[in-house]
Length: 286
Image (cartoon, one colour):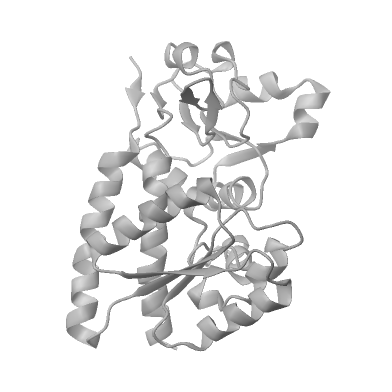
């Protein structure tokens, strides 16, 4: 029988621990962590995430500020704003809200955030520390995935892990986190699919993580019996939100599976707050 890996109860536990940590920080330093979200222009999708960030921040006692910038700002203008936040000792964490308007290169812009204020863990230094097995601030979604896998109590040593999707924000750092646990890790991508061998890889997976953004990409019949299935995908089909995995069919074979919505999503904001608290502590130990 399949077990649902729901993110909300795990996120609630993490938030409770973070709330206690913020109280300890306040009593020790007389300050609380402060997160600044930088938004260029307006976007409906990011507005939902911002609302969630603000709500969770306030519940934990973390200060939250939304810094709105004109959508016509130049890349250098945005970088200059980030540099000012880097220099502000009251700012613990910085997050750049996506998507950015055309003409603004996120990969370049994020490299100007102080690595110890990088709330999303996307600065090249933070990504490089994962490669070295010495992470400080880890990208939020990969952190969320690892928390969900941890919930299953599986020993990852030598396990066949298949990551479908190789983005810088999920697939690549996630593969490195699994490798650090000595899992046998394979990363699949568009080339795998176009060659026609994606089903072969998925059928081997004892742990399957899918982060592509294509509804029903992974067929339920491909799932290995007893597999752990983590579906990061969020897709709107008609009036429904679905993942990248055919949930109903996959549930007949999987040992554990995340629902969409309600799986990875609720944990992502909790991981962001964990990074903000960790960033505060890193800066005080400089």
